[in-house]
Image 1 (cartoon, helix red, strand yellow):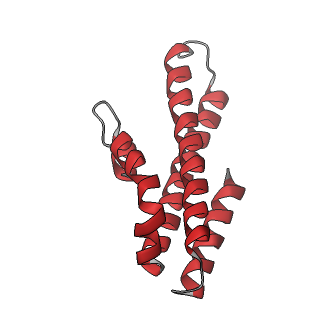
Image 2 (cartoon, one colour):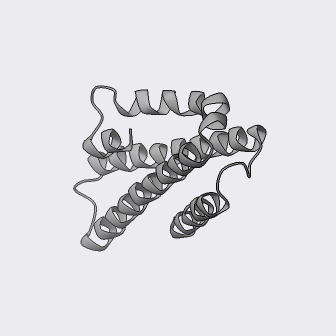
Length: 125
């Protein structure tokens, strides 16, 4: 997960450094599709970890619990890095993002604002 975090940070930096007009509409849209897919994978890992935590509460030793918490924290940071990447696209390629990327993230925002979601999910939205 740390490698994915570094990758997201690097892509975000490249987008910001390159500035407006350096990406075509198809590139912006494809990047938005991939970021959404990666966000959904990370969210699925978070949900799976939370459901396993509830089932295995009695059987987990301290080391396993620590490792599980580290994984959850790393996934939360990763999701924030993906949100920053999407934000850099919005910032530098406004018109192209509205044209091809926004529709990718509206369902993600709606999902993270739904009833029953935790504070970290609402923060993502």
